[in-house]
Amino acid sequence: MRLIDTLMRLSAAEEFFEVLAVPYDPAVLRVARLHILRRMGERLSGTDLAALPDGAVRALARSALEAAYAEFTRTRPIDARVFQVLKTARHPRGRSFVPLSSLRR
Image (cartoon, rainbow, N blue to C red; front, side, top):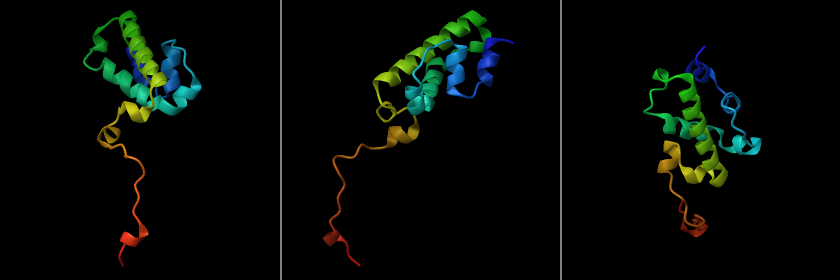
């Protein structure tokens, strides 16, 4: 079986790290697993992995995973804004406060 086929069958983030032999901290993965995999996918998009030999696929996928993981060891997922819902969300400025006296019945 080709490596690209193996990668396509993986479902858990830990599986990607194990198959590509990338060390990781489970605490980082618990918080940012989806963000890491999404960023890895973004880094690999536009590359026709199916047309490449296994060695090249492994090198590219490993590099993309290492870079994505490193990003989320330095920043919080909310700050990286990987997903559309986070890209369009606004950071609150201070606390939102509505005084009770401003509410009417």
